[in-house]
Every structure is written in structure tokens, then in C-alpha cells.
Image (tube, rainbow, N blue to C red; front, side, top):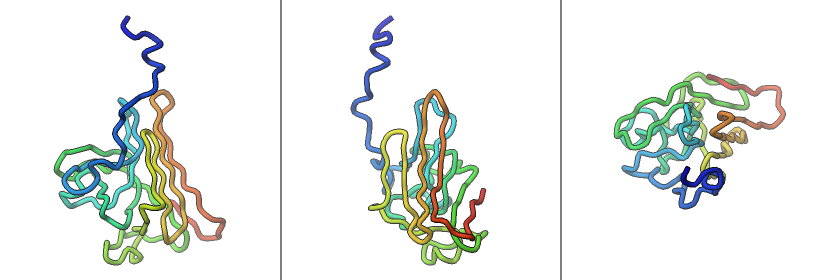
Length: 158
């Protein structure tokens, strides 16, 4: 058996940085995914434009939410199923526009508050202060968490 156990334990080298291809015509997403993973946890910045066929466009300044399924390089918006949002304050039930994200549950964010590595994604949403972390593992599944400040009015929506 070529490589055997020793070959499987080697750390992956040369993995592409998760943000490569997320701007312009790359149509990739930066979220957490594991090889042969059944879900691809990632943020969504738009769901209808060709530029956001993967659900995410680096040049967008707001996030609609985080969904479970994404495809790279399809050239047409697809999947983005089961969208999760997390907020502080009165719940909103429409996404709002890119021009006026506060008109809905869409949340502004900064790339300075965003990070990703293979199998991991993290962002702090600007208006609410909610920090979202997404992880993917090959053997134990994937997970997501939203950490928000203590308040009487916080919500998560599916």
C-alpha cells in the first residue's frame, strides 16, 4: 500500500488560501469544507448575481447569512440552501439591500474581521457584534457557532 498510514498522517501542503477566486469571475467561496464533505458551510453575500454564483463575492461589504451548501466555479447561482442568520435586537425577516443592509437581516462586515483557513472560517458582523465560526472535519462532521454579547434581544433564524 503506497504511503500507508505514514502518507495519511502527513500535513497537507500547498493548499490554496481560501480567499483565492472569491472576487470577480472565480466564483469560489471561503467557507469551511472538508474533503468529501457533505456540506460546505460558508457566508453568503448575494444569491442572484452571476458574480456571486458561489454565494460569496469578496468585494461585497455585507453578509446575508451562512448556508450549508455551495459549489465552486459553476457560473450560475445554485445551492445556498438552509440559510442561518444571527442577530441582536429586533428580528428582521427580509434580507435588506446591499445599499441599505440595516433595512433587513443583512449585516455589514469588514475583511479585517474575517479570516479563513482550510476547514475553518470566522467573521465578526459589524452591527450586531456577533462572531460566527464555521468548522469542517472529515471524520466528525461540521459545525457552526455564533457568539453574541449578552442581551435580552438576540435571535437566530433559519
